[in-house]
Image (cartoon, rainbow, N blue to C red; front, side, top):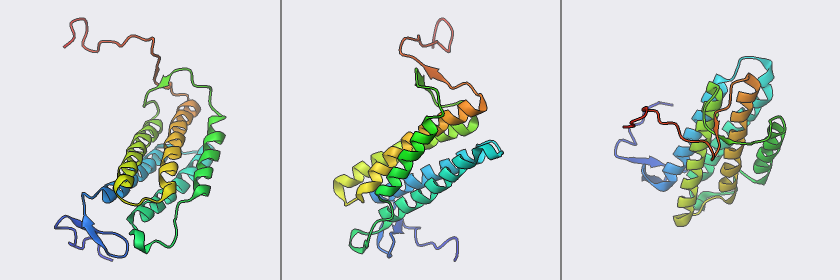
Length: 195
């Protein structure tokens, strides 16, 4: 299989089963954004500390990456060619169980969490925001084309899980979790006069 085919040089790509569509089609943007989230999750997993204490998080991350590949397959399959769905209710329930398991290991939220802290936590936060963008593109796509019904729910739960994983990384590594409350004044980064 060649890496380059030149078939997309004119701004089109193929869905599964070969149907050609424009690369800026909402459907392509949607599964492309899911791929972007998948890549960012891969970065977060690569940045985790290199010890056995992260085995369960790594397994969860690998499962999620395979699921996101399946989300992409669901989105890239034309409606008239679908024989079933790759992502389903059980996949959503798996995410809910993971959220409950990891969240139980964290102190209660008392402030608004800001993205950052340990590099892996920051990457999980970035994956969370990309996943939220993917969810928004699914909503937009569903207004004009048929979308597999479990995808939106899956992405919604996934963004929650990625938030919990970011917090878990900071908690376990002892890195202070950036946070803010509504009552805190915003510091002026430019000194007294501002800019």
